[in-house]
Every structure is written in structure tokens, then in C-alpha cells.
Length: 113
Length: 116
Image 1: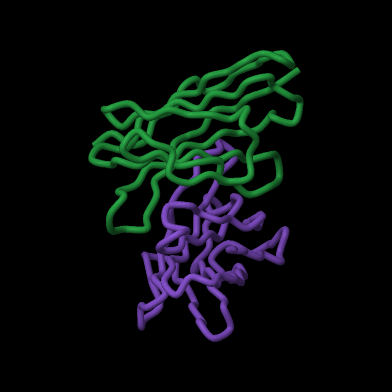
Image 2: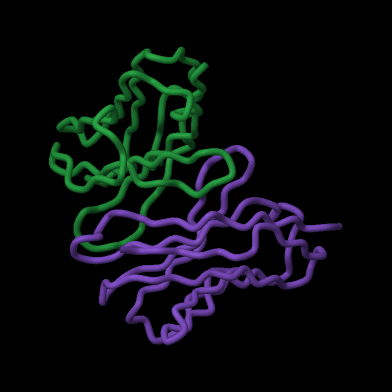
């Protein structure tokens, strides 16, 4: 049973560039949430996707956008990168109905220089 | 709004001893779930234990137990018989029902170091 997978593992970008991160949910899960974790802090909720629509959003600017595909996989896009966007980006999957449990992927480490 | 507070930035414990990691929370949701995750230096967030707000008994998972005191809004994690591999960052988190469903709110974490 495959868990949550994310790609790439690490990424280095320059200020002003755009980046796309990818996530495949755990088998059987239909909901994907994205989190940003700055060094030494807890993860911060970015947004959640279900049925290919953004259902909830945290306090992140419009530079952060996403997409969910019919196979439930998801992308996180960040435009006009800032140095402060350097962080570990975590994807979590869950079942929309029922359990509170979320399973996290290994994360993508983004460094903006 | 939901809020999680972890007041212990760092904790030390001797191998084979028990340790309690503190967590207090605040929410307006009548129904919610409380979680603990372990994050090793590799970065992956590992689910440890879950407690539902209406569960009558405290949750246990092997060496992990959750001391849930609803009136005090606390959800402390107890690790019994600590092992060297328990050294990691530990996060308390919560998810609500209704408007907050699906969104997890995390504390700032506690770094646990197990000494041999």
C-alpha cells in the first residue's frame, strides 16, 4: 500500500521564479492538503483540495495556487518566489468523509536564493 | 480560530524512562480531533496517536498514550520506556469538524532528546 509521495525531494530556485511541487495521495484517499513548514516552526496550512476544487485556504497570498487532478494527485504552484518562501512543503492526504487522520508525505525542501 | 500551544521547546529524558510532552489547545468547534506527530531530522511527519473530543477513554498506541483533559483543554503525550530512536521533534495538532474540517493546526513543537 503506497503512502503519500512527493516530488521533487529538494529544489533550489532564484527569487522571482516560479515553482511547481507534486503530491500523490495515499491509496484510497481523496483529499489533499498542503502545508508550509519554516525552519524551527510547526507546519502552516496553505490549502486543501477535494473533488478538484480548493475547499479551504490558510493565510497565504494568491502567489500560492494549486490544482487537483481526477486521480486525486495534486500540485502546488508558487509564483514570484521570495526568500521567505524557503521552507519544507508537506503534502497530506485523507478521506474527506469520516476520519480526522491525515497521512503526510516526506516533503519537498525548497530553497530560494 | 484554532490554536495549539506547546510550551516546552526542548526536553531531555534518560533512556528507558517515561516523558510527558505538554500540549494545550483552544477551539470553538464542538467536535475535534487531537493528534501527535513525530518528525525526525529527515522531515517526514509520522502519525503517532489520535484522540477524539468525544472519546471517553484516553488513547493509547503501544508506548504512546495521550493524557486528554477536556476541561483543561490539554492533550499531553506520554512516551513510556524511551528509546534512543525517540529523539526527534514532536508536534501536537488538531483538526475540527464543520468549517475547520480538514485543516490541521500545529503547535511549534518540542524537541525531545533521549540520553543513553
